Image (tube, rainbow, N blue to C red; front, side, top):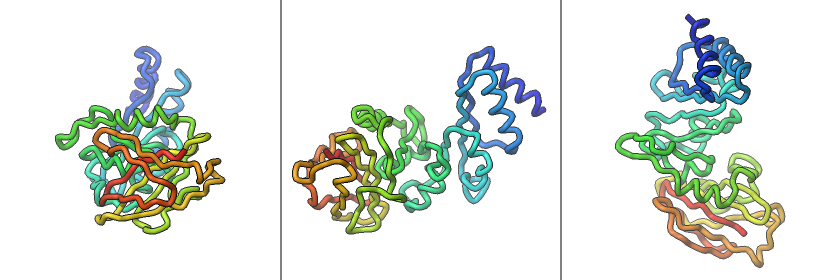
Amino acid sequence: MFNYYVEGLAWLVRHADIDGIYMDDVTFGRDILKRMRRAMETVKPGCLIDLHSNTGFSKGPAIQYTEFFPYIDKVWFGEFFKYDRLSSTAFLTESSGIPFGLPGDMLQSGGNPWLGMTFGMTNRCQWNTEGVICNPRPIWKVWDEFGIEDADMAGFWEDCPVAEASDPSVKVTAFINDGCTLLAVGNFSDDEHEVTLTIDWESLGLDPAKAVLTAPEVDDFQPARTWNPGETITVAPRRGWMIYVR
């Protein structure tokens, strides 16, 4: 049966010109996934393997599928996830894929775009979940205008040149380009917080005397707003900001 499956997959790549495969929870093991990867790469190098899972079969899909991670390209771990209740640690390790070198998307009820942004995550365009039709295009537009594909990502879990100094519930991830940095600020608590950001200006190559922090208007995400360096930023519960520093 597995031989038929793997050879059938190679046939589809060869004759139907597919670019990869989406897996929605699977029962086979690492050995079969390795064969799938090899079969697709032999026919068309660069094929993608996208893995989806929920919370129904284990303590968490990241634990269940750890041995798959070297052979897949993206994760979609989020069905039945309560994004408005996840801690920043759970978001990082159980949903994002980042600790394993993989990008990820959000799922259930469209996820939480503000908190997801601190991991570079959005939901999937036009996906219908719990009556929510996902539309990440406004966020993608900011990404495109900023040039996020060329940026270096420095998350709050590592050595980030922008730190939230006044409240540990608010996390900051920096996407760094020459002359401009895009900050993702997320409040992982149920309380509103007034915060100030500590910024390593030298690392960003910016002069604090001339710098301005600007939040662009983004539909269904945030209004336009401007702050001076050191000014207090109000972050609503389980919400956040995308802020240009330049």
